[in-house]
Image 1 (tube, rainbow, N blue to C red):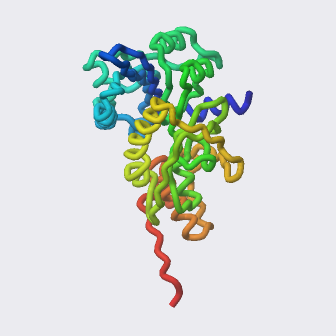
Image 2 (image 1 turned 90 degrees about the horizontal axis):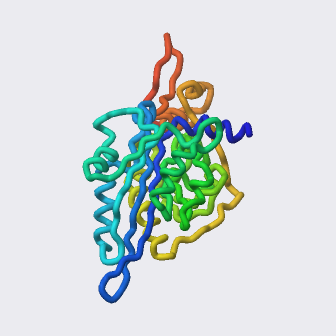
Image 3 (image 1 turned 60 degrees about the vertical axis):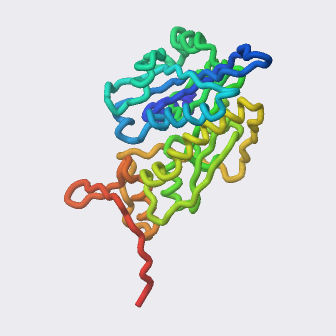
Length: 307
């Protein structure tokens, strides 16, 4: 009970998305073609919108549509957006605006749960879409299991680390704080654990010496994550998506990083300080006390040796 309460609390500070896909069989002359529909649950808060870029903004939506158009003979894509916890009416939030302009239904609910229990009206609105697959990039709410298990093809989640390493809500931060030489993301099948489900696919990249959360996200985790989501859905549509159990060896979980626990310990070695600063750049921002609080960004590590 304590763990679940802790999970709900820390996950509220991250963005939520759910893409749900539904397939129908329609006649197409002498054969049938599959029509792939999607239902997207998208949520954001003002705080989070300042911290991260939405994984699926308008340009990424266009890319997904384009990639599916390349295979339009057997697959087409129709988006339905369900917005939960949309607290910020902001021009930057392109995805729901595009959906509404296109005549796509947009649902707005404050949360999935109330006092620890699923809200029936929200769950029923979700079920009415008839989704056959949930896709959840940066899913941060504790989604009810009757939503996770509802689609016949289950639910998949994007997580910005090479699982089972760096489970938890601050995976990108800890990849840099720990000085990892490689980073990446996992798309995995949701279960009732925290980032513990079977792996569908993973992608890796080298970590550059002076990478920050922003540079790593924008260079690889963000653009390649969008492509990988499309790839994962296509694998499921083709019946070729694997379910690879996560090994226990190498598994780790780290807590969420926020301003209150981002203070730099200046007694550490130089490389550890460098990793701490870039692992909080720009959010939540590493800081020290020098005549007041001073935030540190754009750290560079130089090993000059001894003369």
